[in-house]
Length: 312
Image (cartoon, rainbow, N blue to C red; front, top):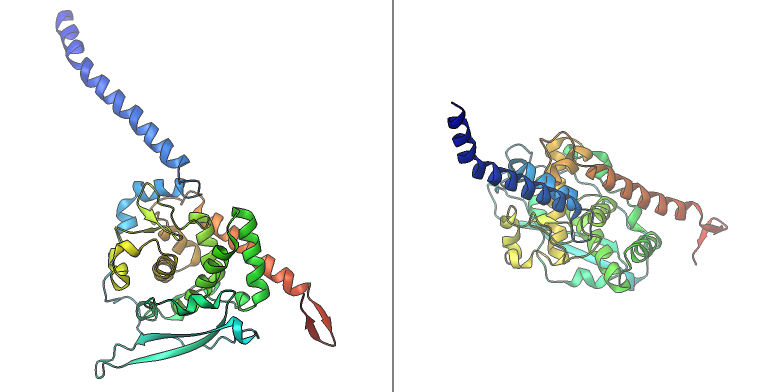
């Protein structure tokens, strides 16, 4: 009997060594993913994307959004006064998807931007998808409060990120302007988008995570490749003007689907069925609140003369 036990133990020894080896490798991979993220805050969130792949991929997008109405609440947002050289007239197509007519209408908005030239980029709109999500489905916190309608606030935000990440001034102005422009197109809060970009990629468009998330908004390219089709395919995924559009649309859809801003952020990071999101929503909300405070403080501290602003 003793001999049989020894023979069994001897036979199982290689199996135990393999199992132990796999456990060690798994631990190193998990720790590596947790601490990684190419210098960004996304490492821990990549882990969520891998541990719950079904949730990260459960949104296999199609052209039909049965669960959402195709009616969009119309609202006009007044732009802040600015000089002609600082104003971009934004025109984008909005398919009405009418059963009787195939005509598309065009909506024009006037948006003040730090870098108006971004509005001249030849890039298609994603509003034909985002307009299917009615405003009534969106958490009010995710809607535009028009804080970024002020060029003064835009400069303050650009200053903040330029110093925080040691960014090239022209690049951060481009990213901020693109975000504000796209937020108008998608009808979502630009401050929220800027906070997501900050947490996801530190405003580095070349960031690519181990889970396959790319660009400023760290969109899972392989999961959402159908969204990139209208922009020329996944080869365009890291372009800021494309990546922000796709990411903004996905975020808006997930907020509507999840029922709140925080749950939408949890879905966005791929942790819909996990107990928590590794602190992701808290990080985004904290960054968003910092930007809001920055803008509100500047508005409060403006000097006035006879009821008119004195701008420095």
